Length: 250
Image (tube, rainbow, N blue to C red; front, side, top):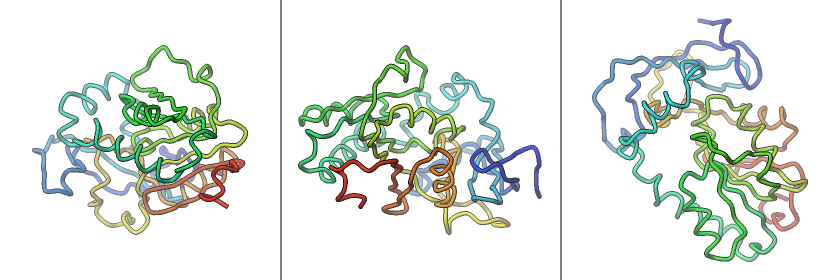
């Protein structure tokens, strides 16, 4: 079934209705934790061009809708690691990736939440800042400066408009810059005419945009950026690779 009203926000191809899941479908189901059914259907569509999978239901949500229905005081129940465990692990991973380059790095953690990761890096001698556009605040992205390393861990899948996200990220990029980001790719996990059982497709967690490798490549091309993938969950965009990151991307 093709719905001409929903064009892919990445490549503008037609999309096909893929499946419907209950709003309470969440990532902790992968660990055997299930919420009661909400009775609210969430429809996902799949692009026929780049295989980007998305839910148009969230395109018109207000910030308050997201705060009330997803990022509320119950969010920790379905993502217990977001407060401290994940940002600490990400800070440790960055220090392992760049063990001797911290003096050369000007780092921005985009979508950094409570700033735990950036603060941890700063305590270890990094020049690191954190910025989260959600909820809206008085920090204007045009006034944050330019950075040669930008991280966006567990951000891409939460954003209803990937173009707006990329516009923000590119505003923060210095002439030589690499964006490191994490999101699981949907290749071999999502197929037309099959049920959407993938654990990462979880509207209750705010996982409303699901990327194939092809869609990420197309998204980078759209914003004149090169794309690289290190694993199914760890990727990068870059325009001119910084010399201190040659060991990562050559």
